[in-house]
Image (cartoon, rainbow over all chains, first blue to last red; front, side, top):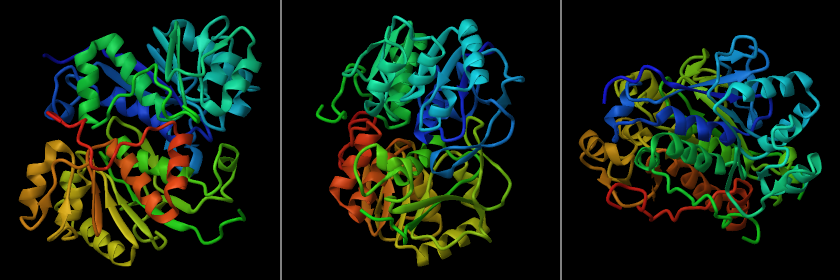
Length: 216
Length: 216
């Protein structure tokens, strides 16, 4: 396996009060995927199919839930083209539902992206941007009703961990890891996704599973 | 449940080339734990038993594996007393094995901490600091031999996800989530740990499990 030159750009949107694992799970999966299996291939970017970066509305540091401070790689104005757009969730999504600059940026980024995906209540932002109209979608179990109320044309799926109906949505927090591994599988094949999970010592949860949901 | 005033301090050590999920998993678990179940209790810190912060050798931003940039809350000189010391792993642990300032800080922080725990190859740093001498311990599957070679008195456990022998060590990357939930269970009880997992939509992996290990 030679050096991969044309890496797919994974742009992860971050904002104040973004839930930490919502963005860190997919960041880990995409940034540590290698087309060559094992540990040693992870020592360099040569066999990495993805280039992962964070994007925020402004260049200043973002404070995630719990107080973790992240310096975004790009602001909206400077962000390079995005192939995979990832929108995480968290309580910080609520003010975004009225933030026209954010919604407009997401709409524009989604048009040119190959895939658009959300984690947890990131689905609320996608719905508000109009990207889930008429689609099946899911979100954190605590926000299923809110998603349905934001756009009545969304068919809310309460029993699946990951829903792919053109736009990909996933259940709460840790489900973003499974969503990212699913996208890796779609783009790079099952062996590459499973090798990434093995490197992370992560037991993939079936995307149709609901075992960790209340009452599930 | 009233407002918890005396929160336990969780200090998460971060450094250049720290593995993202190694620190973000425990950060998520400890910072989102609430003694009152459900989603609404997570909207404030009132019912939070932990105060979580990051500590680095220097105040400048840290670049994690994959390029994620984090601004540490404290440098070594300014860090408040730590009750739970968390040492994550990543390729960036290798230079730390020869960094006497880091090893000395970890030794001192460990003396006053109530619990010391590592994720992944963070165990190498604990071993080099002398904190695993004569204990059972584990690490990422790719570093089990290295751990054994660093301190011959360590009894390396290759088949458990989390090992608690006074000092707590865990397997690779995602195992840090289970390690943190285990510590929450020890300190706050099973119901609180399970409620945190439910909030995260995370299916806890038994700490004795090895199913995600190669050949496991």
